[in-house]
Amino acid sequence: MKILLDAMGGDNAPDANIKGAVKAINQIESDVVLIGNENIINSKIKELYGKNNITEISNRLSIKHTTETIEMEDIPTQAIKHKKDSSMVVGFNMLKNGEGDVFVSAGNSGALLTGATLLVGRIKGIDRPALAGILPAYKGRLLLIDSGSNTNCKPINLLQFAQMATIYLNNTFGTKQPRIGLLNIGTEETKGNELTKESYKLLKEKSEELNINFIGNVEGRDAFSGNIDAIVTDGFTGNVFLKAVEGLGKFVKTSLKDSLMKSTLSKIAVVPALPGLKRFAKMVDYKEYGGALFLGVKKPVVKAHGSSDEKLFEYTIKQAEQFVKNSAVERMIEEFDKINSKKLDI
Image 1 (tube, rainbow, N blue to C red):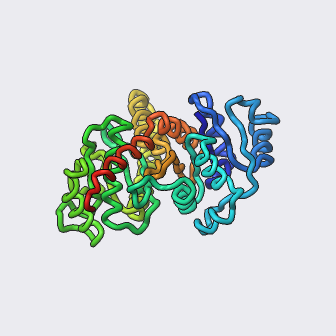
Image 2 (cartoon, rainbow, N blue to C red):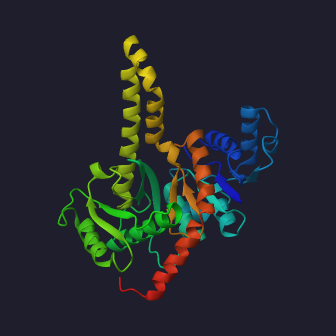
């Protein structure tokens, strides 16, 4: 298996990308190809590890040379069309041509969406692919879809997000009849804006036909109760929700640490509780859950956080390998082929 890593994408590129790949390589079975400017990457390898070539670190690490980079401020469609030798476009083309099994990037989200859709292609029957981020929940996990790729959606999009979440959770984690909720400002059927009200009606009408275990509207405060497996929303709301949750997690960890370290007595008192506190810190750390899976395209694509550090790249690379091993995309294609063959009236 071969993981394609955009070495030039993200706020901390290429240092964090390289360090994450080096940390991950001995924990995975796959080869990792760092896509980017070979001179820059090799100079970083020399600076960080004192090696002249990346293969001196591991023979399963290699570089695919590119001369361009898609920047965060670039207009997505123009960047994909005109920066043909960028690390992102080259990565997508390698994925499409079978030169890799999964593509990972922390670069421009809009360009990633555009490139994946135009260069790799949508799965037949899916109107819009979506980012599916995995978050911690009480005694489990929560899938958030869409977490940032489609800021303007129609009810059909949210219905298909629910379909993709159901298929992914069932086939990847063995979650039978995963509980799907619609993110809203209240649990009542009449709550929300036009999109959520119309989406609620469509989900309620089509859930049984499409084998979706729709449990109704869900408020943000109930998202992590452990009673929900996936939350469906538009990409604008989902991204705001995601970043608010990440910020709250950082706040809780920092505030808790400050409180426990405030006095000598509290420092002594916390010693017996350290194992439990470490487990808690690990559970609420979003970095442990890797990047967001781009569901709905024909090949595996993973979006790492734009601010990813080496730890998050390490976990995202491991997650990407698992994404391929679980045949998540192949199973998604199979399930939508079945749905398409029924010619449902949606």
